[in-house]
Picture (cartoon, helix red, strand yellow):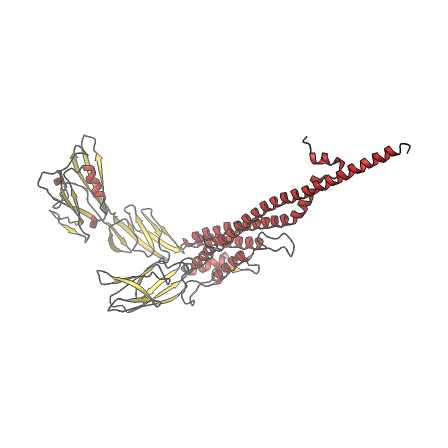
Length: 546
């Protein structure tokens, strides 16, 4: 056991344990400040924990909003797997039934050029002009271009079959591959895009020296190299015969993509109807997560004054309460109309706010509303962007206010404004003008107008999903309220940790000061005790009989 020399030396002094006394006095002096610092650390850590719970819940809300935004008010089904269908634009889809028959599937042109002995041997130079269009069924066949610009491949005398395949594949609408036939020879296969109007014609322009590229000249007749002729899909929709270059057709039924996989043996019915089951499931989940969010924030901000424990954010409720208030405002608004006159409210769909701030979901009322008018969901789920007097594309900047925006244009100069702000335009080859909006108002959209257009009106209505996503983004963004508050709390923790370290040093200094003073006191007491002992002994020696 270590020896406490100060205590041992103090046996002839006051008898006090001056080390323990010094430590106790230093601790008593520092303890209030240490306790206050620890309280600040505990409070900051508690608030960080509460913020983490709020962040996690907000992220779940954001995920749910992403799921809801993909919900279609309509569901489409096919009576035969020969035709599959998918709704790709819920804003255009509608309740409908269509009868389809497929008599031909679209096919790509396949060309096969064989007889090559070495894919790495030089072919000889020259140029190949690739044209795109259709071959007639005449004998001999005639080629008609589809309006696409011819592409010219210029090859050096050292170019190989592999390099030629790479050059062909670099062209849009062409894929090429060198194939080992297995008999000691190699072929190069060319595949066009599907559709009779996407066939290839290749013309060879020879160099001065002989070249094997001459075999690729099919400008007069593709049949010597053609393994499969290009063909368009042929089908009827409600008795009307149509053709399409591909087997994916998205322009016959509004908002629907049809995929033709086989020829049909008879009429196939595609039926689009209200997506009540899917919508019911998604909206019930949405209401559940709204209620979970409301209850979490209520718990985090509970003060405990009415009994029970205080919440983690009881002393820092502002951010959580502002987030909840913004959510409640967004949920109380009507959506789907720029002027508010044809808006849809959640209450119209059976989603009601209760007195305690939670939401109830009337499934029967929701189902009846969707069956009566499935498109009412669109205003809640997707922003509305339409234009009168122009065609409009793109997505406005997040946070763009709902409203009607005037487009004005000078037909002579092409100069134009949108909502009073200049927009830049470029004249196209067909005489139309395309204007791109880069200012804050409706930034991200493009307007296409005719050459003589003087004005247009752009209508924009934000959706419930967009409004809620903005609320979540304001909370969770890198510059959002929660990140800023977390940064401040982390700085508080760093500051208080430094304060604790400083208090530890201060306590050591105070203890050392007390110990030094008590040591001096003990030395004096010890000296006085020694003098007293000497005098006692002296008196005893002078009075031996006493």
